[in-house]
Length: 311
Ligand code: APR
Image 1: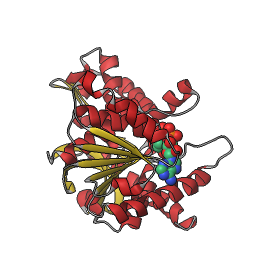
Image 2 (image 1 turned 180 degrees about the vertical axis):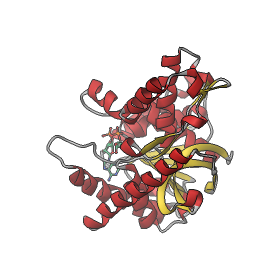
Image 3 (image 1 turned 90 degrees about the horizontal axis):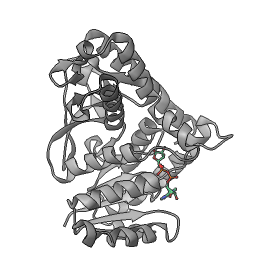
């Protein structure tokens, strides 16, 4: 029996559960949250959509980690968004506390799981989950690159007025300022991006991608994006569950690839039942390689913040 748990039944978590369930790729998806009744109600509602859409995966809503036992994959979405008056360090402290507790429970009940972290700040939370779990680092990874690449692809398709499915877009590094777009690997059909769009337009799209989350938050006023984020996280779960070895941009532990060691960083990796099977070292231009190395330094600095707040 294959089983996936999603911790956090908020917007991101519940949409991730819905996508995985509707794909009908696992027997059971467990959704858990600290709010009593929330995962139970959402699960009941989702399960009633099964005869309409024609899938069998059962969703279990619970507040009890015992129900998550023996999961193959656990997605951590639990966390708080930044509230007015909260500093970046305050948020880091709150979410670090949540991710630590959640990870301890996961280890207790699903010692062989692959953990996919999506809670922000992503690099720190992925690093923390890896440290707290004590799992081999290939079994703990984070979601960021799939989302940034998808956003970049969307903006390219709009600007070039082409079929979204003809666009290849790649971003590495990390979320936000340290995102590393890789124009040399981006294309519209068979045409390199650098020939399809002028340099100024590409720069504008890169900037918009970097700020992609904030643009949506500004529209929504409360809450943040979850449709594209959950599509990204669910796709990672699918590759792991199906042991497909599919290549996708993820936040993975670096062990010398691109000359970078001992840090979680957004790179292209092959995913399967073991988590990260292999990090693909794709050919980068000198400036892209430099940007990736700088992103690694920036992430390593951010991780020291965790030590400052004693996590
Ligand atoms: N255990 C389980 N669930 C928890 C815990 C905990 N210790 N602490 C909080 N939660 C739950 C909340 O009750 C809430 O239902 O996490 C959920 C978070 O949901 P939302 O506030 O809707 O946030 P969401 O949009 O889903 O984003 C979750 O993903 O993209 C990141 O920055 C985002 O870190 C945030 C996370």
